[in-house]
Length: 260
Image (cartoon, rainbow, N blue to C red; front, side, top):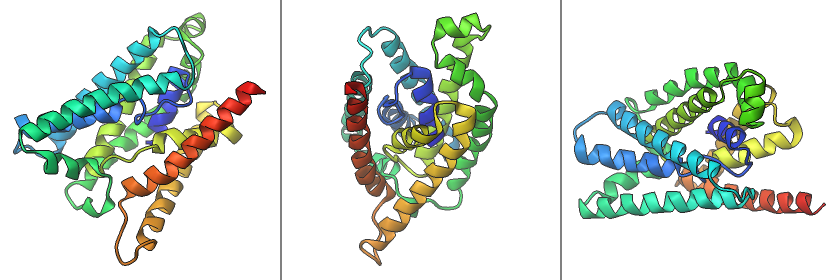
């Protein structure tokens, strides 16, 4: 998820864009709901395929909206993504309530490691070759983040690179949601923290982003197991609380830098 957020931030040229703030996760949720309604007896692979298609559609729609917005304020763009995601989430909740699937859909959407069992966690391995692919194309993503005109001047097929980035983001997001559930802010705060001391060159920052994201998630999981031991706080809540605080800090830091 950290790598997915890093790719999205590079392609959209906005540090506050991630699968959480671009509607990608909300579209993936809608895809899972459609899979539960239409393919009620299907396995997790088919559910992930449907979630991937919806996540890809949602991410592509967000990028198109961003391209047509003239006011490119760093905070305004993710607000548009949050509005889009909330609309889609409301549609998902309506149909889940209509067809008595609120509990079913909630079990998929709350990030919780206690639900990771044999037969479900294997889907997360799908993201491994995608991470490797992201590393191979890291330099191209870096160039694409400088704009379409600049990329074309260097002989880069800008649209194909953007499409590849969107596919990687959608696949990673859908596999994580199907396996663990929704983990908010992970793809937002980790790339920002790494870029503070490592810069925006993807090939240099991508391994550290993956490592720091893993360490941060592990620390949040250990904390969630210790606070109310022997009970466990879902990773969704732990990362959400800590991540929201870091997100506010990053917003204030961005405003101070602009003022300076």
